[in-house]
Each structure stands twice: as structure tokens, then as C-alpha cells.
Length: 393
Image (cartoon, rainbow, N blue to C red; front, top):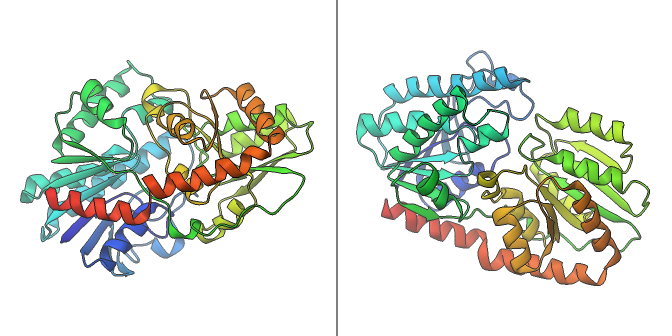
């Protein structure tokens, strides 16, 4: 099958879309990716992609076409310009691309506007369009500060509804997304559940070496939606307990604010490691007694199952979360960790105390985590299901 994959982010940026496309090529598909210039998460376009260089390249068999965009920089205005410039320049590319594809697949992270060039390709050439949704819009924008009920939110609501309604099918990374499309957006498009998997390098993370301390690791984007400040406040609450240590691995728009909050609250038990290459992440997982997951308190956002959860499960690590919705239901149903309501930092601190005091539960939760991954989210299961769904479009 000849596929055009549209996603604002691609290698060398670290997103799972890279592995999906590389594996599709290994399985015999012809894959072209329409993407932007690498600038995430640092905010500046990487030097080798400036001044019109490397706009077309082939990476592990995937043909990559890069559209111009303004680096995301810092601040909401610059981020909005980043989103808009990619959408505009990619729509221009889509007008002149040879539509020699069997299907267009949008790998839809934030923003939803990355799907606009795919809509244009569908309209121009009559190509079927599948949209793989990871972030619900406009709810993701609301969680970042766009006021529901305001003019900007209303415009995003209309645009999001139009984009989702343009798809022939929506693949949903979370089981709860279908309710949002149906009840909130009123979109009458078939929705198929397709949970994501973890990269293979997390399959062989060794058990934590015995020690007296309890290491808790958060890995991933440190943005507004992730509510990492909930972790920092819990860490400050536990700063008098010498056993408990917090490791924050990742970068994002809220990182500096979280650093400042940790200093202000005296959370000296918290270490910020910044961004690390994907291949280094198993080393941090190996240090963890448990992994941390948090999201902002928002009903629609709670329906999201963060991609890090599959990596945590694949590594066989208990999960401690301040989170609502699908993630909390999964952790409790599989008995692979402890969860409290989103943004409840006192509850998170109490859950960590319980975890630290009950070492006998660690092995049980770890085994349940790995078993849950194998039964629900394995890589082989994902690609078999993806093949089936693509053939049905």
C-alpha cells in the first residue's frame, strides 16, 4: 500500500510516529511523510534543516518531505505561529504534490491543524483519509489556557469539528474518545480503537537493583497539560523523607516553571535531567521503583491515555498517578499501581508513602504491569490491527 503520512513531527524529533512509519516500510508498504522542520522540544529549528536544506530526504526507507515552519520558541503566540505556519506551508505543498497514494493517514498529535493538508489532498484527489487521534481538540487547547466559551475556543471548535468530520475513519488511541466525537463534536464518522504500543527497547528493562531508597521517575513532555507541578508539590511534601527521590526526565513548555517551583518549595529531592535521547531512556526506567503519570483536571483530557503509559507497562514498572479517566481505570483494573484524582498533590504524596511502606506489593504490581502490556498493547498486536484497519478504509 502506498501511504502518505501527515504529521507535524518526525525524526529526529522523538515521537512514536517514527517507529510506526519505519515498521510499515519493513512490512512492505511504500511510505511518504509530509512533516515540518525539526524544532521540538527545544523550540529552534535544528541547524542542518535551516536555509532550505534537507527539505527532502529518505530515512530508513521512508521518503520525507519537509514543509517550512517557524520554530515553536517560547510563549503562546510563538507556538500558535508554529502551528499556523506548518499548516499553511503544508497546504501549499499538498496543492502541488503528485497524489500517487492509496491512502492518506494523519498521525494527529497537537495541533489538529496538522490535518489540513491531508483534507486538501482528499478533496483534490479523492484519496481516502484516515485520522489517528492522540490529542482531542479543542480540549487540548483549553487545557493550555484557551478559555471555553470565548471567541478563540469557538473558532477552534468549529475547525476541529470540520477536520474530524472530513475523515473517512478515525483511529482512536483511547477507548473513551468515541464519546467525545459523538456527544461533544457531533461527528458522524466511524471510530476504531487502536491503542499505541511501546518501542521495543523497553521490553528488556531489568528489575530495579535492591536499595534502600525509592526512586520515582516521570518521563516525557513537561508541558501544561502534563501537570508536572503536581509532582513537584508532592515531592516538596515528602522532602523530609530521605528514602524518596524524584527524577524528571524530559523537556517542554512548563519545564522552567517547574524548576522554579521546586526551588521555591524546597523540593531538594527532585532532579531534573532534561531531554534525553530515546535510547538512553531504559537506563532511567531501570532506576525506577515506580513511574509517575499526571494530567490536568479536565474531563475530556482525562479520556486520553498518554503514550508513556504503554512504555511504563512494557518496562514492567508500577505506575503511580494523579490522573482521572482511562489511565486511572486501567491502572486500577490491572492492579499495576496507585492512582489519585488529577492535580491532587496531597493525595499523590500519600499514595507514594503507601507505596514506599509496602514493598511486598512492588513485585506484584510490576508483574501485572508487564502482563497488562502483553495482553493489551504489544507491538505485534498493534501492527496486525493497523494493517486490518488500513485495508478496511
